[in-house]
Image 1 (cartoon, one colour):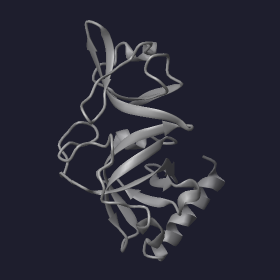
Image 2 (cartoon, one colour):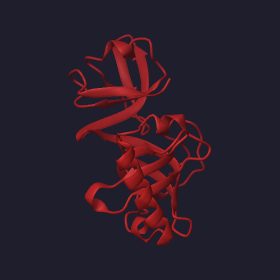
Image 3 (cartoon, helix red, strand yellow):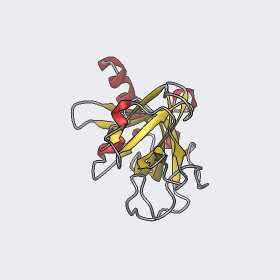
Length: 186
């Protein structure tokens, strides 16, 4: 992201904050998100605050500004960017910079922010994606998303060979090499 784009995104967030989060309020729902971490389980598999029916938002995640950076969810033509609060800082969420994600948490319109409780990767450059924890058994490598199902990885990249237990994302069908992949945590 260029400095100019980062400033524009940050400016849009400031406008949303000044308006009391009005733009962000229209994009949330209380419906469960398919593929999102189940209540009581965080996106990385640990315990969460159990936010059943939490607010959700989808867009491309950007880390803007100087480190540690402000998290901004860019929504394309679907509305104003949303400022995300990931306190304490979530390295897996920050590793999703540039990916399309679905965040789950609590919208705080009065403060102009969305407090993130968990997230899932949904797409990489427009290609549907899945994220989960790498597992190995006698038949090969598998991806276990937060919903608990297992997806066999037929042609995993060599980088996954020694990464059992890591949270990764995979864009494209699982029965061939990925279009894009990466690590969210190791």
